[in-house]
Length: 150
Image 1 (cartoon, one colour):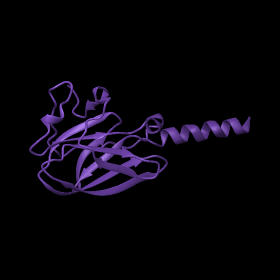
Image 2 (cartoon, one colour; image 1 turned 180 degrees about the horizontal axis):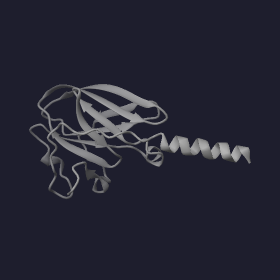
Image 3 (cartoon, one colour; image 1 turned 180 degrees about the vertical axis):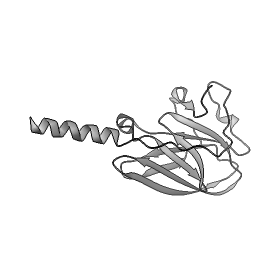
Image 4 (cartoon, one colour; image 1 turned 135 degrees about the horizontal axis):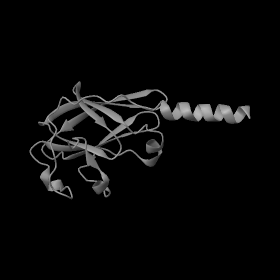
């Protein structure tokens, strides 16, 4: 009986401890108007950043990522969410934070050029991952823009 109670307490703590406080974006976020989103829309510095969190992260709410670019908050990307921003060519420092049992922070230096169109960010077991994919994922019709409809 005591083992069941301890297990229940551990599970409830591990699930509720994974909530990450959202941050407000200081970027001028863009809407997307075509459905489905077409990769050809992204040129002249228009970049899609999406959270590619897997199923394991979605179970315990550890999929939420707070994203900063050059110490300026982009906002919080939950699983299956994306943001569209404009970035001029150059080097950028992306800081990613997700919370599991503790905060996992990682910093990634990214070279943005005229060919950069799509960036995938996602939490991992012990850190975070950032990858320039320039490919929209197959299940992108399930994603939503972080700009909320009013």
